[in-house]
Amino acid sequence: MKNEVIIHLKDVAKFYRIGEKNMVKAVDGIDLKIKKGDFVAIMGPSGSGKSTSMNLIGSLDVPTKGSIYLDGKDISHLSESDLAELRGKKIGFIFQQFNLIPNLTVRENVMLPMDFQGIPIWEMKQVAEKILKKIGLGDRMDFYPNQLSGGQQQRVAIARSLANDPEVILADEPTGNLDSKTGETVMGFLEELHAEGKTVIMVTHDPDLAKEHARTVYWLKDGKIEKITKKRVK
Image (tube, rainbow, N blue to C red; front, side):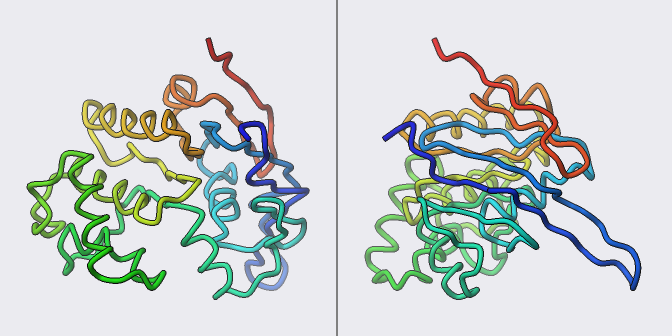
């Protein structure tokens, strides 16, 4: 159901201690609900808490206080191995720095998330090749990351995020290292995924990107949600 909440951060805070006396409140009591099928932007300047929020939303980190629900299940206190298994199935990550493994081919990079889920190698190859052809990299499967342009590497990162057919795509500054034209192409892919029913969550400092593509925008400041804006869908 489209109005069903898939991720809920309930009164979540994340504090970091620096030295004996200094406490940094990276996220300070936010309540954030993401519905299935939405295109969400987490927006804010450097130091606003958006990267920490991304890590909490993606279950890459656990909160200092509060609860995180994924599909109605409280995952705040799961073990790291259980969290890793859960996010491997539910969430696909697209990182600003691409995070491709340099000594693996394009095909092998896309196969990697499936390998962690114990999928047979023949099936991994089949799925990886299908996704790579879909995003226009069918002729680059045996290339290595350093043989690709920045835009091509980002497309491989998108392909890898889709490997386990996750419900949620979490993109961290997806156009941050790209020129404007290539960035538009990458955003076009994210729009396509959203149109296919994926929940897309984008972390960005670019207000134009957030306003143009996101249906819901959470504006963060000093670790708190300053405002929420929604776009009317025609």
